[in-house]
Image (cartoon, rainbow, N blue to C red; front, top):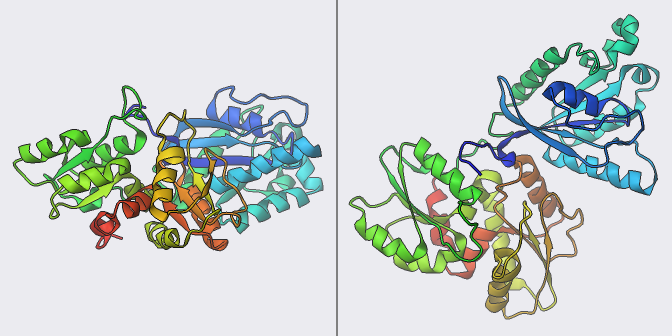
Length: 407
């Protein structure tokens, strides 16, 4: 991924919800100016959420999500509707789309959607579509929503974009995503500081590129007016010796915590990319509290290893091999590990003794917050890859010290 690209997890997520054939897909095509979603008179054409990244000026980078109709029927229909409702967990602005003529006759279904949106405290707009079919009754129908539009004729599409931008900004969202108002590392730095980033190039490292957290931290360091030095763990000692000025902080891939902690002098702050993202996207304090559960694990306990992205797992994969191995070695217990990845995350967590989650760099802040809140509500400890590894390697207190005065 280029440093110039805005990752999906950093984009404001705007999702379209409504009945089948309310014109959600047509409206998304009209907003984006592209034929992204298949449009048909047949109900239920959209069977899976459709994602489209774009720039919405003057707002900036956003992610539109077209969803299946929430009134879909049958077993497959129920599954499609379930997928649509799951999108709410990552939605920063909900667009409730209604066929204005049908809504005039019966608004109960839209009210039910609105209830779900309000329960999750998501900002919303009610959009009355297909104005070209009932323009003679617009004065009555417009009382049901925020704006009347026609995806077919383009009526009020420009005005809709402006309303979307206004509603998002009114809710305090920025181009970094709603909820992503926490800093990465910039608040720890001053102009002229030096930061050393430790990036092991093992078998699991992607060929020819840095992973997203590393890219984003480098960008944040540069924007703070500081300098970033990147090295492998095997060259860290030589890198530190070559620097004229003591680095402000050393940030490492969590897998190399033990080796890096030995080489880095105690008077130089040390943390990991994963812990930085726990603070940025999640709830660092909650994930530190979850560490206590490690020492109470028993034989047969089930651990959920949750990741926000999907990737090809190689030998030595951090989530399915290394952390499970370190955890069983530390506890001396025979544990069972299950995985979830990408958009999948179990609603029921009570079967697990603990949730171990990645840094969430690919997840929108709202979705990461939802996952942590689910664990808290069900009283299941949740920890972050970085915080757990730091604990298992005996460097947790040192790794969170840089944030003690920067909550």
